Each structure stands twice: as structure tokens, then as C-alpha cells.
Image (spheres, rainbow, N blue to C red):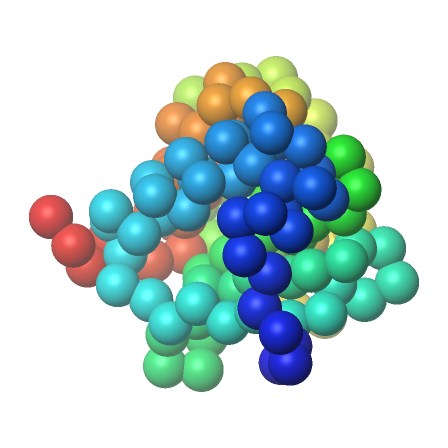
Length: 137
């Protein structure tokens, strides 16, 4: 947990105006479909901030921010990977590449994206749909 949650000014100063716009659009897209409990945290060694979408102790996804860069992470467990692999051709080449190169840990395949625009948002939402059905209509 963070002591001080960054506001729009700090986020804009950290990632830049255009990336903060991408960040806000991605958050809006997730929040439109999912009722989650967002949690701010420290971003570990590689990131300044972490912003997780959680519900019932499970994380749906996490957004990360550092200087001039934002990240979007989805972790696919074993069953979720099978679902992804069945429909992998429906995803963009970039998403397939990130999937292939993603590190697999005991709890799943950690897919990290560093979006610079909204081009992959449809794929992001489809990936989240593998993890959990949207609970908002």
C-alpha cells in the first residue's frame, strides 16, 4: 500500500501527457466492465507505482507506471493458458509474441505489455475475459 496515492499531476509528470491519457482510457475500459477494488502499491524494482484491480482476494490485472512508461500485466494460470492457446490466432501478433516470451512461474504466465497507445485494448479486454467474466453491463 502507498502512503500517498499519486494524483493526475504526479502521474502526468511521471509518464507524460500522452501515456497518462492511455492509462486513464485503459482504467476506464476495465472499470466499465468490472467492479473491482483498485489498490495502489509500490512498483517494486522496475516500476514507480503499481495499480492492481482485485476482487475477493484475486487480482484481475495490474497497471504499472515509471518514468515515460506504463505497463499492463495479466497473469494467465494453467486453465487460462489453455483457453488462450485455443484462440491465440484471434489475437494480434504482438500479443502472441508477448505470450510466447512471457516468463512462466508456479502461478502462471506473466504477460507484461508496455502500451503507448490504445491499439491493443481489444486484446487486453479479451485477455481479461479469459480470467473473469465482466460483472458490469
